Image (cartoon, rainbow, N blue to C red; front, top):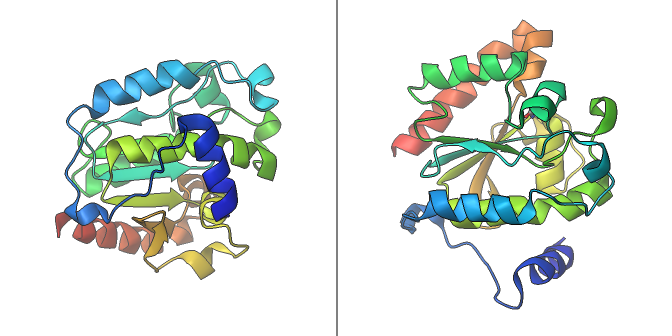
Length: 215
Ligand code: URA
């Protein structure tokens, strides 16, 4: 995992090694908005994997560039691919309600993006090769934003970021480390739409997330 990360970041960013320091002591980047805009311009025509040929819109991410909370989903779905924004379908609307419940939102201390920036056909799971090509973009977004906490939404986002093969329950409830930034895994909002029994556990997770952000 480390070798592939180093190779990818070197290809993208040259020889300057990026290693995130502990974010709690890190100052926010005052230029995060323009740095993100510039980076988006640089990569939005990406054709590194086959999804570049089938996407309608590149879904870079959106929200508050100064956010301490970065939410990471799996990949854009049909609505996101049509509009170029993350989490704008039914699952996104539920996510917005959850964020309101912790007194946050896309315009207020939350940034939302995905592991993959382009939609896989028929919403299939991301391929390992697609993740390998796309993950450095996420790392660069993290480097620019320096979030205090990353929350991976769902099993696929959790396993692809943590490079583990586990059910969601194995990853939930732990504070993981993602290249120096604390990371929590919780349910994907689409899972809550399918099974409302997961809502109570998700609410526990978001109360924990709020307490970390407020600490
Ligand atoms: N599901 C995701 O994982 N990401 C989106 O942007 C939308 C739905």
